[in-house]
Every structure is written in C-alpha cells, then in structure tokens.
Image (tube, rainbow, N blue to C red; front, side):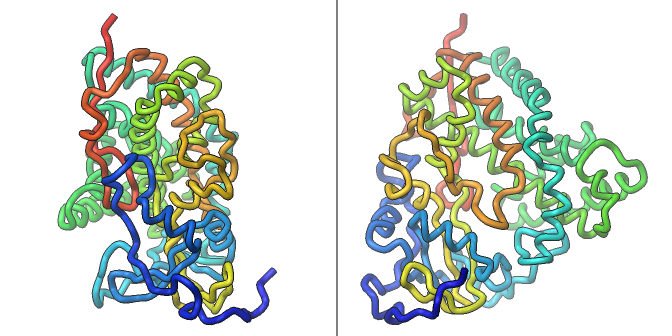
Length: 410
C-alpha cells in the first residue's frame, strides 16, 4: 500500500539536512567493517541527504528497514540512465539505457520477461543438483594447492577458479576456450579503463560466436536452453554477459574475503572446522557480515515519503547494504561474526523484484568450498600480518586482491 502524501516538513528543514559525501574509507579499524561514518550516519538518520560527485543531491540509505522498504517499492527504478553515480563524476556523459538482455537495469514488464525465463534455470533444486560438480571442482583445486604447497595465494589458487569454472559450464563455454574467456572477464573487473573496454569488446565478440554455435548445435547449458525462447541473439548475448558478470567476481571475492574473516576469528574458524554441517548457516552469516556488493542504486519515479523524508521524483538513492546488514535494530551485536547466528533476512543479495538471480548457485559454491578448505588444511593460517593483506577498497565489489596463506605439511 502506498503511503499518504507527506505532511512532514521539507527534507531541508529536518535535522542533519546538510548533504554528506558517501564514506568509503575502511583504513582504520577492522577490515571487515563498513566505513565508520556509515555507522554514525545510520545511528543519526537512516535516510539522509547525499551529495553526488556530479553535484546531484540525492539520498543515502543506511538503516535496514529503510533499505529493505526502498528495494521492495516499484516506484523506485533500477534504470541506469535515470541515475547518478555516487562513486564518480562522469561529467556530461549521457548514460544509455540498458542493452538488450541487461535486465537488472530494467523495470516492470521488461524486467519481468527476462526474469521469468531465467528463474527456472536457477531454482534451489537445480542448483543443489550441481553440488557434486562443485565438490569435484573444489577438490581438484585443493589437490593442486596441496601439491604446490605449503603456501599459496588463496585468491588465485582457490577463490577465483571455482566460480569461474562453474559459470563457464553453466553458460556452455567450451573447455578449450575457458582460459582466455576467464582472463578477459577478470580484466573487466580489475583492469584500467582501456583494458576493460578491450576485454568487454573481446567478450562480446566471443559471446556472439558462442550464441551462434548454440543456435546451430545446442548443448546442455543455460544459453542453449534459452535458444528455444523468443530472445533475439542480441538479448542472449546480453543475458550471457550479465550472468558472467554476476556469477564470477562476487562469489570469488566472498570466498577470498570470507576465508580472511574466518582466519581472523579463530573461535568461529574452529566452530566451522569442528562441525561442517554448520556451513549453510555460516555462509549466511558471512554474507551478512561482509556484504561485499555495495551500494545498490535506485531512483524515485515520483515523489515518495520514506521514513518521514520526502524523496522527490528523479532523485537517486544510494542503498548502503553493508550498513543495513550491520543494523543493531535487526541483528544484535551486528559487528560480531557469529556463525551460530541465524542471519535470515540479510540484504547481501538485495531484496524485492531485483534480488540476485544466482544467489542459490553462490550459496552452493560457498557451502561446499569453505568446509572443504578447512578440512583439507587443518593448520591453514595467514602467511602475512592481517594488515598486509591487500584489499580492493575502492570498487563496488569489496574483497582481497590476494590472500597469502600457509599450512604445516604432514
């Protein structure tokens, strides 16, 4: 039910009305905590004015209830051409509407058309059927780590290849092409602008050829399944690229940063190592505690009252999921990693119509990988002081650039 028109004062007449800039600095304190200012902002006012780099005055949402409400409200749009970016000033560059297949930046029926086609490909049951394959891929990489040991960069040896192999198999990327395909995909996330553009072009070219091949000779994979739908080649390429982007970098960073968090919390590490059946619950708590994908953006399509504030049509809201998932109003002692916590309702995968489509695949990968790693290497530990672990501090996907680990050889 929509709220009645606001009778509250205009936003600039309320306390804390001076726009703030979005905090991103995690250099002080625990590397797993949100920037300290976000916690302060949430305590003062869970929805407040935010100054964007291009001068736009929008909003910053930090409270759990506010963030969840905004993501569930269809009056807030996901269309990127309507949004302002809280991370950079793009100047006068005009952001184009979503490409065919780029459904996460679409609303309503356009979004729903793609979502309906893909939902059946990512059901809980179908993803659980992949468990045996995830177990095999994980074991293969643990074997390679053990043979090359007794030290490794856990990011390159473990965290990146497991989700990369799984998403390539789901998309039907031929085995002989996986190496170059994964390399180009990684460059899109971590390269400089010129390299990113070159990698994007290379992947688009590759996906164009792959879709043509699936049309001619379908195999047992998602892209082949979708060739039976009414999606055009352009749309299939867009969907393929989106699934690649969504299924690769996020899970890889959760595996790397999640291991770092466990190694930094010996009691929680011991709990999971002692009881691998705790893995499913542990994954939910790690998702809540780390919340690596942040912020999520929405733009108001009309004037909307939220939490006593009037968000006007055209204003962008940056939704700080990491602050929302640490809200003490939702989770007692939220800054403590507690694998016995039932972290239900966390927003790490978003909420509402745009909630992450591949969340069940990510859960399967992590639920298998974390206990397998800890069981195989009972003496696993950091090979460098925690403060020397390089972190991806200024991207929308937080994580460890590398994670040097070591263990005792038997």
